[in-house]
Length: 268
Length: 278
Image (cartoon, rainbow over all chains, first blue to last red; front, side, top):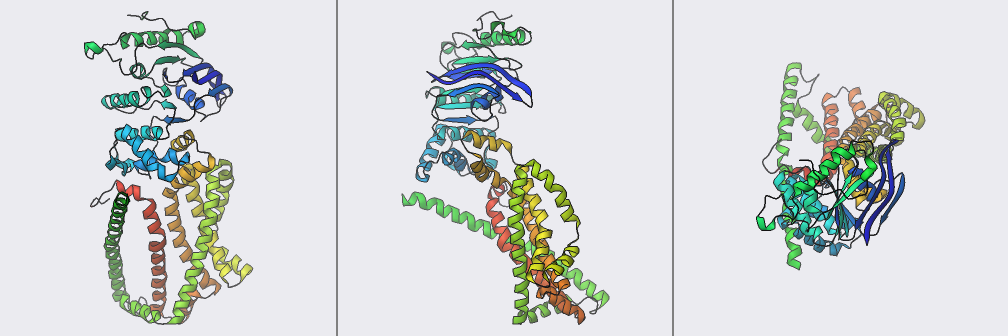
């Protein structure tokens, strides 16, 4: 079962081709991380997939019921309280007013927001709290697919890790499907079931990498020995980095396109 | 169940009462400024004599005499009615056109030179034209108000939409909002930042222009009363009418514009707790 499939997608911005020959599928219950250097069109791809932008050609098939999106900046309404912000999607989904309070409380509990924070305005909340509200807003509409558009890039390291854990527990373990855009390979390796690498110039997906184990169980390898990953993240990152530095810069980048990147061939 | 609902209502009422008291308390600063003005006025009166500048006390007693005169009340009401209807018309038309122009850059490009022309034509020229068209009637005063106040409101609304946060639009779209709902839930609210200062300015303009148009078009109201005070060289009475016009403007501004602004800008105050003065 696929939740999202993109076939031969092309997108141009002001006549300049940004994405070309994109074929991508996200299976049901899978979090797919899409990585690539900045400016390669990852976010654009997510926006096209979510229907925020119209593609020039190609097909996007969405086989999920409802999607939600979490952005790099929380994009909260400054004039609305945290609770009203969480309820924003419910309002748009025309959820009856009497049901909203329960749904808001449920979503807030999932991201560990306290009742006292719900009456506060975004200006009164810290950066991490704001992003929690944004995640709760996405979860409140009970989506079965979530687009993550580099959601934690602006946060500091410790906070980012906490937010990743939050995503792992509320999305990856809850059976949601998702497309996670990031340029941080460790983040991709922690959160996703599978990693896809996008070409520097957006000319196709260079390869996929199936990650063994479940999201959240892989760490940087500095964790406790009993939880040490089957494959250290450094190996994945070296593979992907190698892929990037060699495949993306060479003109015959299509050579290994679509094939799984070889494991353990990292340059050391 | 009832307790669960009652608690937020009580806290909301307490919150509102707090905000109202804080607002009333801030009036002291306003009074201080007014008394400072009165002191300078008194000094001017003592330097130049009552014929050039009546003392604040004489003017206030003139205001008091006028307050007991029903004819004066009907004059003031006439001006008030003209300014408010003119302002309302300018606000409705200006906001509607401004919103369209904010969303459509092509409209904005066509409208911008027209706005420059409208701003450039002196109000007095419009008074002359409106007198020829409508004579000394309400329509003359209202036309001049609309023409002078419209550009300000238009620019305020257009600016608010044009400078809106596109991320919020994108977010609303990601949650399935069509253009109309995006405008209602996200766009409209963002115009308030620029629209409220514009509306305050337009309201002040409406009162000023109303009095001026009445005086020049001999259309009664406060302007007409000022004209007759000038003919009689009654400085105290002329100043009394000025005081009345300004008081009307302040009354309208603080009963109409500021409560709405306070309600809409509640979130801005959240970052500025009690005792923090900026």
